[in-house]
Image (cartoon, rainbow, N blue to C red; front, side):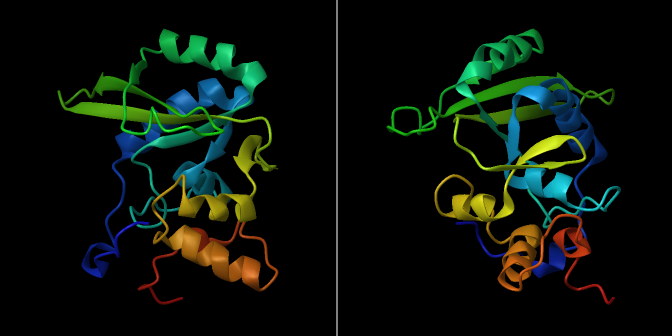
Length: 184
């Protein structure tokens, strides 16, 4: 589970390069993966929303890959310069055959950026389609915050829990990326 947020930092936004680099690889993987975690909440949010750091996590990219698509996804990742990175979770038995891939990119400013993809293999993930993106179904996604994802304090997760509890869909709801300190 994620740590509690420091509300003094609620206005901070993700740097545009973080979003751009994430979208660049996701657009290449789009038709062979199911997006999970913070990027799933990103695509469920209204388009052109503010990229608040506390709304959804963009530190890494979580994807589910159907076993029949693993080879295609691996070819794309290798072609794009991603390398396997070993983690403490690699030797833990799981149904998802977890792997992590990373790529180091350089910005025009000379700053280094790491793009991390957490790769889970599965043929049984419940999905929804939003604006041509295959995403983990919201209730299923929420269930992952007890074992796969850790940012359960993000605004999108909290909003989705409330919306689903009242029978509303979180997809396209402004609450997924709304700063709770801002007045309506």
